[in-house]
Length: 310
Image: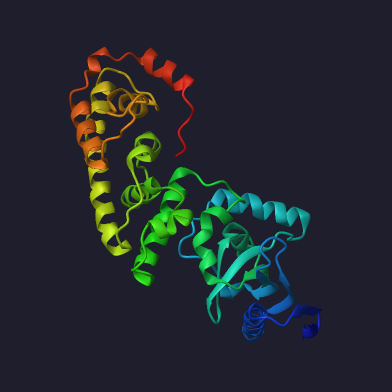
């Protein structure tokens, strides 16, 4: 039997007597203690999970530690749109890892806009399960992720999970990580934000697999894989430098050289291991004859190829 409880002067909330609703009630009480206002407690229409719709104190809402970095251009453009409309109509998604703390895995740019406009409250859908913050890639839709942003978010999640849930494996979090190669690329982007991830991604996507080892151990293996890719990138930089000396300077040049030196072919049914692939790739790049490359060849292939996500 359902019952109604008035949590604030703004709304009546109706829900059945269930364990899930008690979790929602506890979270609602926490929001009120933290200076927020609960407008509604409800079950979502798909999975019937319990959520709160609330106004949270702006100074208590932060980006989740795994979020991509803010885009100043996007924040500026969004701020101007909100000011022009003179209203904010797009609530953010929030989880609460502890009392007094609220993280948004989806809506950090909108949160930054409210910071800039010095709003007192942030309209938010508060999810009762804190682990939803690990679904950051699936939740973020307000600004499409590029390859670097996705990779950095994945490695940030990975490090947090290695500390908090060290007995789990990469396979356990495959849904949240989306693809194994994003983990390796995350390590590479951490060290070099200008790393040519788009050039290496087609190769990595084919040979980089999720590990069955526990996260702390598999992170060590990931570091070794990242080092192999760095060695390959160093060899690639040497080939590119030789091409520049010949006057060939094109933004697609790294992709071109990798496409012609990769040990992987579409015809191969059995792929070599990660280590074998990058060892052979380094050998092929070092043996690559740059004297036979023409600028027109690179330009023609670049026009025909789909642009790599960077």
